[in-house]
Length: 299
Image (cartoon, rainbow, N blue to C red; front, side):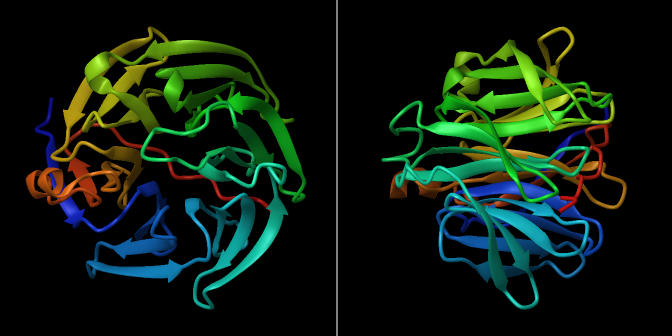
C-alpha cells in the first residue's frame, strides 16, 4: 500500500458541498453548494475558486458534450452557460410536490443524465420520507421516471462493463445494484450489495475506480469506504478530518487523485470549532488506484 495522504484544498465554507466532477477541458474541479445555491469551479493550478450563483438549491452538475454544463436545480434539469452565468430550464419534474428538490445526479456511459429527488430537509437527514423519485434526462431532452418512494436519492455510478447500475437511497443504509441496459437506459432487478455499519453512518455520494470497485462517501461517518461489488465486502477505509463527508470523484491529470466534498450545515459552533475545515474540499493522494473520466451529457 502506498501512503495515503489527505489534504484540504478548498477550506470550509460550503453549506452542503456536493457533486464533485473533474472537468478535463478546464483542468478544474466542479462542485455545487446545495444550500449556498452556487456552482463552483476550483483550479488547482491557480488555487482560485470561481462560482456562479443560482436562484434555487443546486444539487448536481455534469459536463455537456456541446460545451458548458448541465445542472439539477430545485426540481429542474437545466443548462448552465458558465461565462454568461446563464441558466436555461430543460425539464421540470415532481410538479405535484412543491416541497421536493433534486439531489445527486450523474451522466451514464451513453450520455443520459440520471438524477433523483427528495423532500426538503427539516434538518440534515430529517425529512418527509418516500417523496423522491429517480429520473433520467435523455439526450433528446425527454424525461424518464424509473421509480418513486425514494427517501434521499443519492450516489450513483455504472460498472465498467456497463451492465450494472449502482445506486444509493441514503436512508436505506444500503448500496444497491440494478441490471442496466446501455442501449435503452432501463434498469431492473434491484438488490443490495452492501449494508453500512453503524460507525459508517449514512451512505451519500459514490464513484467507481478502474478496478471496478466502488468508493462511497459516508455522511456523518467522516470517511470514504472502498467496496467490492462482487463480494459485497469493504476493502478499505480512508478517514477525513470532518464528519460530514458528502461525495467523491477522481480527478487530476491521470485521475489518480480523489476529491471529497463535505458539508457544515447542521453543525453548531462547538462542533465547527473542532472541525474548522467542515464544508471544505479534500484531496486524497496515494490511493494506488485511478478513476475514470466523467461522461458528458449528450443532449
